[in-house]
Amino acid sequence: MSTNRGQAPNLEIGKLLGGAGWWFSPDLAGQISILVRLYAAHVVIVPGLILVLATLHALLVKKHKISPHPSLPTDDSGNQAPEDEPTEPFTHHLRRIAAFGTVLLGLLGVLAVLVPPTIGPPPVAGIEVTRPPWNFWWMFTLENWIGLPGILYGELIFFALLVILPFVDRNPNRYWRKRPVSMTIALVILLVVVALTVLMAVTPTQQHLGM
Image 1 (cartoon, rainbow, N blue to C red):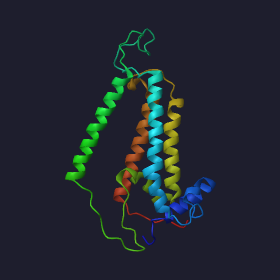
Image 2 (cartoon, helix red, strand yellow; image 1 turned 135 degrees about the horizontal axis):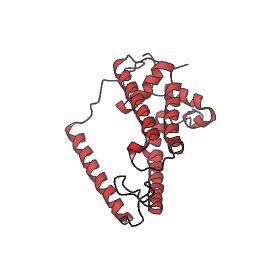
Image 3 (cartoon, rainbow, N blue to C red; image 1 turned 90 degrees about the vertical axis):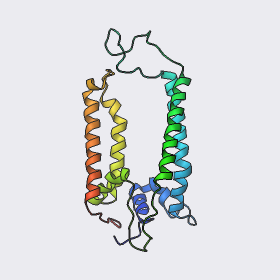
Image 4 (cartoon, helix red, strand yellow; image 1 turned 180 degrees about the vertical axis):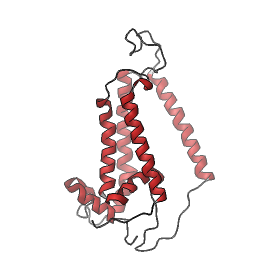
């Protein structure tokens, strides 16, 4: 590929977003490059938003209580748990989350020491030699097909489906095998993402800047 993709794709996506793409505009902060802004967003803004959302999630769990396990007995309706179902304090839930996070962090630390990531090939001006992490490959398959708009619209459609799913399937049943609508949509999304990821791995990467 024959263009520097450090900033160009962000500029193009900013144009696609119109007024909402102000963050990518050179006019926002002329003395601060887009790459520095993106770095600041990833280490400050995004973690801050995650912290706010995690706090809201914890408050909602505290208010609405933890959903009963689907395998537990149900009441006469066959959908909801009986009122006398055993419960536990919210702090117990937080304690399990903290323990799981600690174990996960430890495993990631061990992997970082035993299997450190490679630095990769030396940069060459005007030539793209990098590849995004595998969990983003499906979006770049869409880019190969229709250009940079594929990344933007692919992400928007993916998250839109996640948002509307609870409103599409109002089935009150707690057991996943009795939720065919949700399970079908989830399976289709999973298969599409897997297929696009595999295609990214086996097909040549194309370039769609300047469209």
